[in-house]
Image 1 (cartoon, one colour):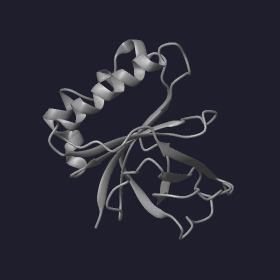
Image 2 (cartoon, one colour):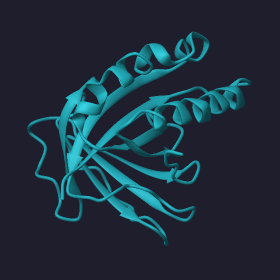
Image 3 (cartoon, one colour):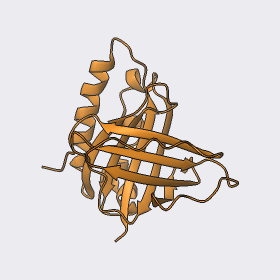
Image 4 (tube, helix red, strand yellow):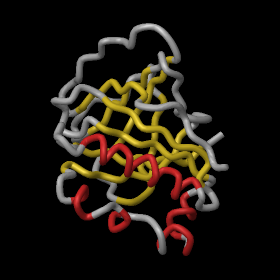
Amino acid sequence: MTTTFYMVEMHYPASEDRAAFDGFYRKHISMLLSIPGFLSAQRYACDPTADAPFLAVYRLTGPEVLESENYTSRAGRTSVDPVFRAKMTNWDRNLVQGDIADMDLGEAGWMVLIDRLTDAAPPLSDDFTPLAIVGLDATIRERGVRIGQTGTPPNIAAAAGWRVRTFQPIHPPRHPG
């Protein structure tokens, strides 16, 4: 089973308007979940010193959702409030597909993402589910994911040419309706 995910990652500074940004993002997710083809959404955070410590993952019915009139007329980069957009850095959007049903995490869950940054990097470890980059910014060559619903996430050192980040959920998975 191949599933399509829209993955948005960024950095947003720890500042006095962070609560306002999080409030905006909650409303933004509600808007996206009202678009036909958006099946779930969840936000995650990792080590704040990472280049992009925030991640939002949206499960879609397929890549065509992001080309639909419902999406293009209401969403995308310009749908983010300009006040917040000006502070967002390392903002990348990748459309990926992989043999994984979902990436929804419970409160005690974790997700390790590993990104191939160079063609010379060694192959993806068998411990990870490969996610093929199929659209949007395509800022990485390959991505792998490993998910756990409980316990301590594995401590995985990045091999040359790979970036590793361990995310935990900011909020429970959300679904349309």
